[in-house]
Image 1 (spheres, rainbow, N blue to C red):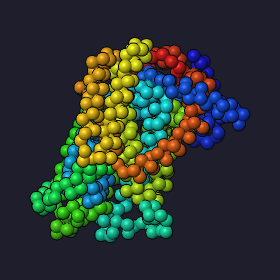
Image 2: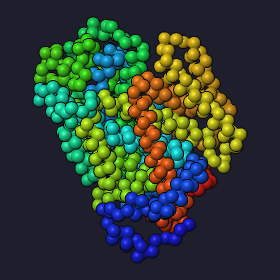
Image 3: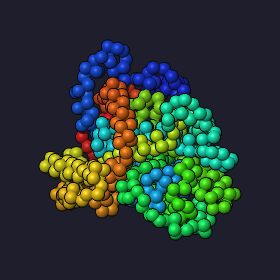
Image 4: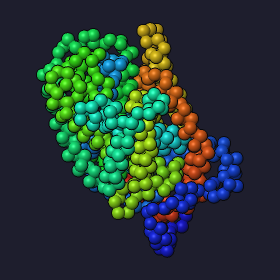
Length: 607
């Protein structure tokens, strides 16, 4: 254990202030101290990769050591009421108001309702997994922290890279939708407020309004989490009234004849649309990142997450049905579907109500998104995968200002150029991939604890997980290659079921949640793996090409930067705050973890 900070050292840290821009604030690790040190680190890359691949964090480390790297605490000021409204604010926005029209017109027709049912089922399975983790490891890192504990550093980096990608792209996509609905509100075409250029298709409409909206919402989030909650509550309440109006007024002008043909693009079209509209559910994971600021995580998080997502799933399905019954799917506007639908049935004034409600919804999505995404980024920076300066919490506001600025600036740059359809498919791949990893991590958490689970059972668990994931990927690939055939499913579906049953019968449970846990384990997490991979397989090849290119760039960053930074920190070579804490503080962190979970301490190097 490294020595505790002296009073002089503590005063020096305070005297430095929050705004730091020196090299050691971004790269304090010994591997980056000089070009010679960096060359030595690169030469040791294979050994360091093996070390990080097998390295694991613990609940206590995530709750204690990593949080201290932010130097100041986030304020515990949120309740289940805040989280429930954050759920509404973070989820209902661009997805339902924009993607519904886009996918009903292009892929699903009136069967867009079934697309929302399919993606909603998959989302709810992921919500179960997130809720159990958030209750037991209530830190700002969300899925990144959970994967560090259960699957290790490399898996956590893959999640971290995709989380940051998801945050930036999600911010950009919603901000551009905001501009489209503002144009509708003032009775102009969706692209009227954008600047036309000669760039490539999909990147040729500059959107400065999106940049301004991102800047305003990010500023609010940096000032206060509780203040953001109050603004979100008011805006979301107004939004719920608009949704009620859309449903009631829409059904008054509904015609059942518009539901025919119900499935014009066939079953493949339904699942292609489901994979895209999954973006509409993606914001719920932001709630898990607020666990560190929640007064009573074990009670408030299940109420906030499960309660809000159940209601949202029902609302989405009803709103999709309303849109499909108001006009033929071929007449649905791709950019401002609900506003144009009301105009086409003679309620011209209603389009302004809908556009205003959509603007409010997208504003809260940006607001809550900025709040949650900054918390993800903060915890990622605590691990030194990205520069630790982004982990700092402002001493006066109690918010991660640096992390908020990082995501907002990057999102504004992307939002200025890229269209929503270019962004949405890439975002869906990233989101579905992370949710699949989360379900896998939950199975590992329940059935494997280092030092408790025997080697025989560990090998058996790995083999059975490989069967579950492999058969799920096979089902998705077979569906994409031959959706009208059934022979492959005769082999693949029973293989998935056998793998899941094998985990239940052949691998003894190593841990049980104390407070709240996912029911029907291993079946629900295994089903979550299958549905997420299936929806990924329903996306077009172009989305995977973009995802593959982004992933390759991320892995290059990890090999040349992130790997060496995390290795130094894990082995105590970087003298930051968490290395200079007392045994009593570590014991307190472990006790905090034990209060909400059966935490069996694991061996291995400190992360």
